[in-house]
Image: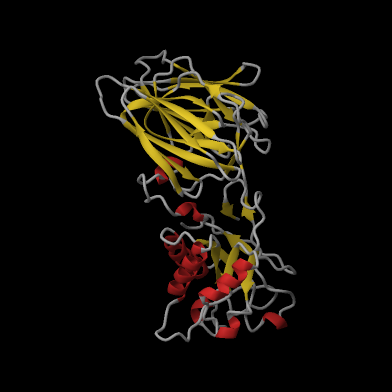
Length: 440
């Protein structure tokens, strides 16, 4: 994990905090069912999705998915989910398939086998409105989603792996906040190729492309000027017309749209931004912990749990423990206490880095809020970014084994000795780019 764009601007006269969440989706991939991380995206981050509402059973046209694929299902509170899968043998391969169902935070729900030539009904009754993920691993064989009583789609942020499906259609939901779509098709080899066509709701072709022996991947796009916001587009799969035949291939959705291919146009998945669902009650403990020299104890977390809080932050950790414990060790212990209570914690991290006005190495690299430098590193200095990156990576690594750790709260307030003598409040100004998902 790291910040890829390192230019920050600053703005005088305001105080800004930036909360950086690496979310619990970074954890849990190595639990039951193996490593799912590469099925989501190269980074392994789980997309935060919500779905349209449907509780009636729908039977789908046959779309064959081969090897390992990830499905996402939109669940409504109290409504039974029933998904029927069918095993499809490829050539003379005789292996069964396996499946596993998990929540969005990768909590295990259920698993089973999809026997050679058979069908399997996967059932689940959700307590809350949520999305759940169904991983199906067919080895060398394939499977079909016969029907579902809830919205369902194929996660294609990394790659959806398919076979044949000549003339079949899949559907892509473009959110109202975005105008275009881009997708990539990958050939299996120089002989096995695929043609794809993209249509608007009026059945007018938008884009098309195909792989061939010399171009094993093709990207098609809706273009830069057209506006397809709020529309459902149709992706048609066809045999190649420039050599080879249709067999194995992969499809990936690019860019900023929900990375889901659905079997019917009525099933829609959209991004559900963090904080848009349940409102979380967060407490920063400057009272109970402070009364105990910031030696945070389980009973303190319990007090706030009983008061109805969802997230507990320790403002700082003790440096007076005997035997001593590092902040990381104390954070791990706190995350375990929170997880046991179905709570979360964040690491409160100072996001400014001290230096000295007399330090030669920081000359010209200290923050300049007015006419005089102050004793913290500039937001454009390599030293500050190295400090942030090193520590955040430590916390992200810890979150993989401590699911109670939700992320990091970065406090950019200036606590330098010169703060009160500066002409304005000297705090970095940062903003988050919704386009790139990066700091600007």
